[in-house]
Length: 345
Image (cartoon, rainbow, N blue to C red):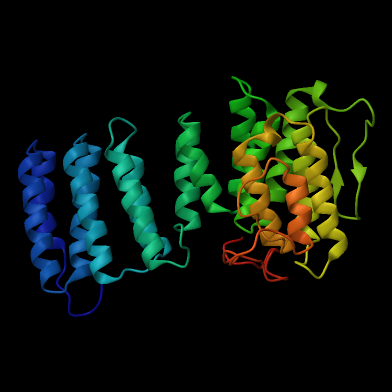
């Protein structure tokens, strides 16, 4: 706590005994009063400490409503102070998230506000990777796979990608084609420019899926197919699993319009698998592949989603397309798709 700020001891000595003596309402009101006073006078760190400790004790005693209210108040003070995202500030938030419990919407509210704070005060527009990773793992362990998925994708860290792979293996055991889960992990990471996470995910997912379902291994080639000294493709009986491995390798070697061989390889790869129909013909997958084509290979997207995506991609690559102003497109700068890219561990 900065020099010159009063200690939070006086306030906490008046608040915490009320919690332990079964007077949560009175404790909650006193905490708000003290914190408001400190915050209005610019004594933010004192206000934060009062709110954090009061919220923590209320949550421990089962008072989710009062505890959540003080947790949200603490995040308001974080915003007013311009509190940076650090191990300490994030740690206070994760403690309160853990204590809130899964019942009701209390925790969801804290999570949403916490992610918004890290997006505003941190380095990442979609929120702090470590916070997302913590939330994703917490939800995964509770079996809330659908709620955990966006957080593990948003984190973008290698350990989050490994965790996502294991979660999708578990999820597929209760229903769903492995290839669909492979696409759900690989394509979003690639769209975010995070090749390292995409590669980590698909390698882990394929290996874990084959271990869980040996019948997925292709009988055409029992051993992995070496592509480079450091990369290999494990052939499976699932087209989407094969495609995802090849897509990651193609994006690793992309260099926008400067590498024409890889541009043409990407178009052929997409055309080969889209001709098979199934999930590759879905609107969502087609849109993701066009986004990746633009991002890594500098292939402009079509004006509309065509019936013939392969033909449209070739046309875009060769400079064709309908007249009119082209939409602004995102293209990765070579050298920013490896382990040193922002957001990667």
